[in-house]
Image (cartoon, rainbow, N blue to C red):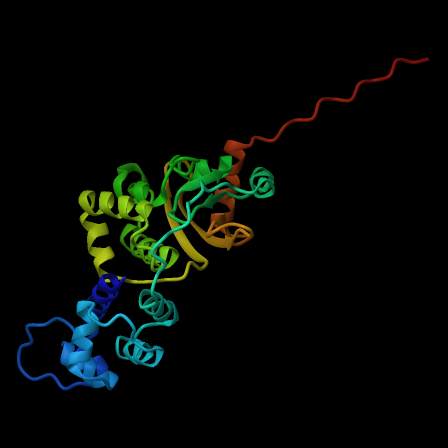
Length: 282
């Protein structure tokens, strides 16, 4: 994991402007962001030691050193946790990974919710979805993968007016979800495929942004109901290894709520009750 640690440090120091770190800038700089020597100086460690960290020649940095680097690199809590995880030795033998299975109760819950909802696995595979989620996007169905669809499917891209902002959040969330397990075969396969097929993914992956999944507003350009902005909440599914329940909802009393109700009516038309039978007179 030392290679990943070095790649993370290089990527993040390249994103910190010297002036934001309190350094004076004179003349033209060839290096984007901070130089190695500057990071070392600001973190209170030697330049040679920092170089060893970037090159993977020091595998046991202390928590104090890592937290100092996190401060210099202006990492938030999620980024700091990711840095600490990358520097933690990983077990050489992995236990066999079982196929992700959605708990029966959660699968049943999806069908009863009156909101678009689906279950997302650790690698952003769609494991289960209700009909309203599929109405929101036909790609949200079991067997799909949110990363692959958002980056590689033109129809999915057309749904999102803020595709660039959405993809940045998606990749940062993926980094947080897989943590230090970037050498997991599933992660390697998915990252390799997307890196070859999408310039946008390749650029975002190289930034090493990390973001904990939180509720956020998502705008859609929906072919049936038009412009629509919904709140998406992602809730941990207990008893699973990283599954999340994603639920879309609208603020009550808004035009978005009306459009979501229209979409629901198109998918789940109200059933007209059968007229009561009249009893014949005795």
